[in-house]
Length: 136
Image: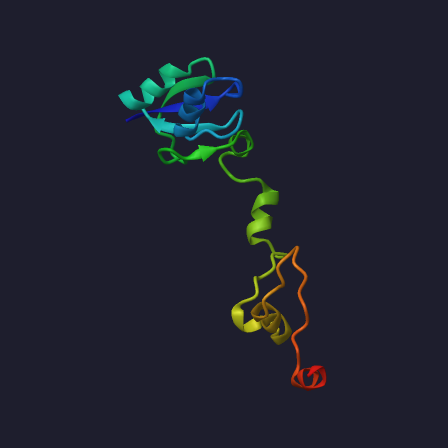
C-alpha cells in the first residue's frame, strides 16, 4: 500500500481557521514536521484544501514508520531515532525516580492536609478555650 509523506512547509498563521484545523487533522504541529498518512480519498481531500502549506510525496510504506507516525526533521536526520539528549532525559543514568506516596515525609503530608487560607480575605486566629474565658 502506498503512503503519503506530508511535510508542513509554511505556517498556517494568518490563514483561515478551517485551514489551521486541516493542518492539525493531518497530524502536523510544527514547521518542517513530517507525517506518513495512508493514500486514501479523505487524506487527498485534506491535502487539496491546503496545498500551499504542504509538501507531499508518494512513498511506499516506510519500514521504520507505522501509519500516522509523526517525525520531526531532526529525527529524520538521525534515521528515525530521537536525539541523544531526549533519550538520556527519559532513560539516562541521571534520571531521577519520582517519589511514591510512601516516600513523602510526614511534615509534607501534614502540610497537604491543612487547608490554605483564601487569598484576599483576612483570617483571624482561632480562639482557644483560655481566650474565651478571658474575653467574657
